Amino acid sequence: MNMRNQFEYAVTKGMLELCRILPERSIFALFEGIGLLLYATVGRRRKMALRNIGIAFPEKSPRERTRLVRQSFLILSESLACNALLMNGRISNDRLLSMVEVDSEERLRKAIDLAPNGLLVVSAHLGNWELVPLFPALRTGLRLHVATREINNPLLEERIVAPLRRRFGIKIFFKKNALMKIMKAMRKGEPAGLMIDQKLSPPEGVWVDFFGRPAPTASSPAMLQIRFGVSTMPMFMVRTGRMRYRFEVGDPVAWSDNGKPMEEQVLELTRIHQKIIEDAVRRYPDQWFWVHNRWGLKKGDQ
Picture 1 (tube, helix red, strand yellow):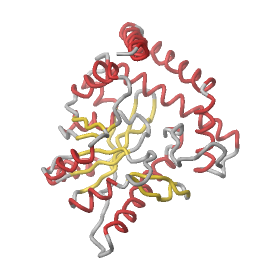
Picture 2 (cartoon, one colour):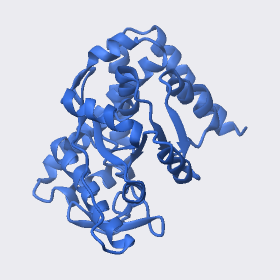
Picture 3 (spheres, helix red, strand yellow):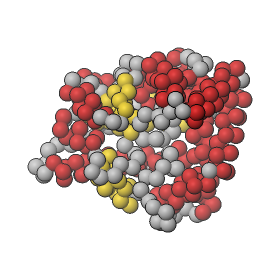
């Protein structure tokens, strides 16, 4: 185990221990301060966020874009504070349920009904995305197979992140060979969840428009839906206030074989999936993870 991993783990563990004893108001103030510090000092990420917002919302003024980036850092820091409280066991299951309203009980029941025959949940790094698989597991017993990138530091993964997921019975597939594992889950009629808003270049991904500009995009959700005939539903956990969230469940994404080659159908359905993500970001522009290089831009690109 290298020294950097040990240092990162020690700092994170120390922060969590601090969050175990501080009043909640102080914890949120601490994370807000960290968010503002990162906004002020991590210039490369701030510039990337500003460039991304310029692509998505060219009509916004430089002042509006700056305000939006700053607010996104603050909302992310608040989500991290909430998650730190969860990791410390300071948010009980009952309290978590009380923190979240569901925008449509009917669509949530629909998702539960569809799950035994194969359900694919698609989501994005929007609001407090870590709660997307946790809340339905607690509220309805819907436990997803979730594909995610393994944290570079195994100490953080094994000792901090994994225990929280195990608490809610979430099954994690790391991205290496994750698609094969999700396909097996689909064959057994087990629900799975994918985050589909980040860059994935060909040959694994395809190029489709996102906010009117081509972006390298994961095509596996469309392939899974077409190949296995599973129901696909979008779900998002958006912030409505301090420690208050709304669980948004979209309508099932309709698709039927149109006779075109598989590659064309996957491309068409991927466009539909990405339009759902784009619409969610438009509704909550200050809650998306703008610091990711979504369009795969190189230095100097505009």
